[in-house]
Image (cartoon, rainbow, N blue to C red):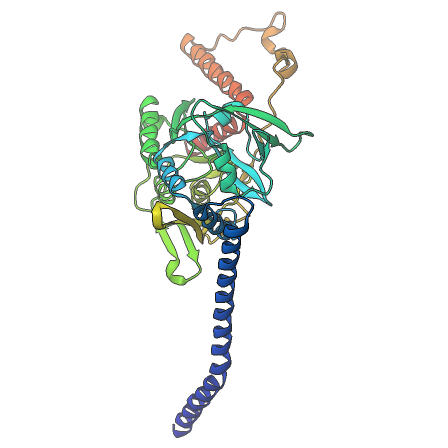
Length: 442
């Protein structure tokens, strides 16, 4: 016993000696770092004063400092930035669900402004802006070299005014212009409709209206179909949804989960990490779920699709999502401005990071290009002869009139569903999948 005690004491003494020996150099290194920081701040002050005194024109000192702050933040990643008092106010309005603009979510990739997604029914969507487009100029002015916030500011303007953006699109050889009329963007966060015996919930954004809209839309769809027993399943359409509020993504996920983790965030320090869990209750009462995603599904959309996928609550269909797996915290600053700073990463329940990887669908389904408007029906769907077309074919006299009517009704419903494939192949695939899943459960 004494030997162990002595060994322990010797270890403690040795540790004290070692820490004392290394404390000096470590403190010296820290002091040197602080000195370098102060020198750099002095350099900043020197440059600021020289610009203010010697630049060819008078400059606004406040604007100079704001630009310097924005440059510092935007150098970190595409999503950190400075928000002027006006921008901070605009952001608060936007998350409430109504704002002025074009209706596009943008990011910056290798210094070029890229469209994450146009929002449904907005001027940009109607004008033909697509996910993945690169914006190179606004009203003839190049935006190359501008920060993301500077480009966004350039695209803002009075409601009713025209803006021309120059776009580079994959698969199109030359850049081209798109004319857009600015308008007040009033987003309906969730649109619901019934297709066959499936309920389609089109979620366009995650703002304060999202969960209430989803809950009421689902309720309306169940009532239209005459009760939950008549519902084959539910499609949650997150395509071209650029994200939004984290709490709304958690609520939408929780709407279809009874238990388990929804999402976790991990920051630089352990105390910055959070975890959100589901509460009992499934609005869909266990009915099959299909989630639709594509390259324009980002952030909050990826949290929902990742949570439902990891818990095997939904089949995810479409193409790989955008891959924005970082958390931005908006921190108020003096003079009513704010800074948007990336503070953590999102992780799905299985521990996957979304960042730069996105959510991979369970079933990859590409949206095929639209058929030319002048394509004839004969070219797109040739008609084959059936038994009933043959001369002298026997009649089917084993069916009652009610049975015949039922068959004709089912055939008409199937043909109606087939029309949807021409309009939206991915959605039609999702609805067909739900129909198949509901048959397995019968």
